[in-house]
Image (cartoon, rainbow, N blue to C red; front, side):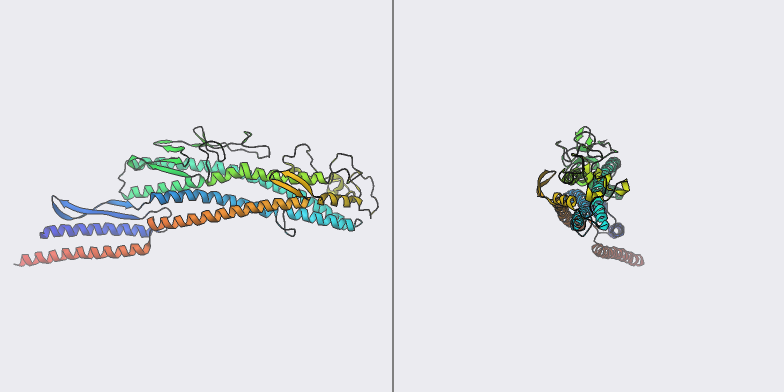
Length: 483
């Protein structure tokens, strides 16, 4: 090899070493940047004719593993779904309660039963009667509150669906724009690598709402589909998700009844739980539709069943001979009629509530009593206690068996607790799987700073070696010049 050829080769080596150092520096600087994929310089031998003339850079390559990335993205959807469901059922379980000494619906029923028993032993005590009325109000208050919470949670789920649809549609347009920019660009350039990273981040955002898959097309573009095969991006065309938010969430408003909206793409129904082939099964959409249209309505039906049971028990004509036959007793439904939404309406009979113009002694003497009776008479209180603690067979709203009024709420608390435990276990499982894949993906495509430092040392050695070749060539030329 001639001296000039050696100089050219060493010079190309210095240039490539500088480019390699620049790539390593960018990797280290972006080690903590979300979605950043490790780069490496693509190097090949430089040939002039049939002779080696050094090395040359062919661009920047991104480390990729499509299989693990696809699995991780799918688990991203599962984690998002499990997180929302677990959080909601945790809140419901806390509100329902599971102990008589705590707070919540079960505690309210337990306290009422205890207050009723105490009133029987001291019917003349105004303090025990007042405590009984407060306990009765506690039942109505808890049922009202839980029903309102469920309705509000449905409303919030609907709003989050609407926000999610906007986010997904905006992300699809962003991917469409990135596709256009990448289609006319050298994909080995640093700018292309940055755009590919950005597109991956946008895809991850979409995956939080619904599971998606991608298909690579010519020119570096991608199509985006749901895992059921519905196109969201097909070539240069974006198929936006359609959804109409609602502004009312009474118990009678349902998706099946047509009062609430599902999601669709170009006429294909994507609504989770629907019979359509395109029905989404995961992500935030999966969780939010499950809550809005299945879990929360079922819970509201159970609350209505509990409210109807306590009203019916304490309205039995055999309990209070002073009231008009057929009228409601201690607990009433001001609207009457259907049990749908009853938990949101249940209240205390105005005749016994001083706050509503009634007389508290009617708890002891009867709702229809015109005057106060014997202070030691506990007949009506005893009959109320017997009705409240009577074990009755009932079936409906997922509650089946024989229960007293308090036992029925205990059964509801148990079902809610089971649901919470199940959702917690699903969340723990999906999070563990997701973390495993995130770590695997990071080890393959992320930046290991220690490894990059080792790479930098090798680059430094290569740079020094090429510099030494140039120094040696200069020394040889100087010797030749002196001859």
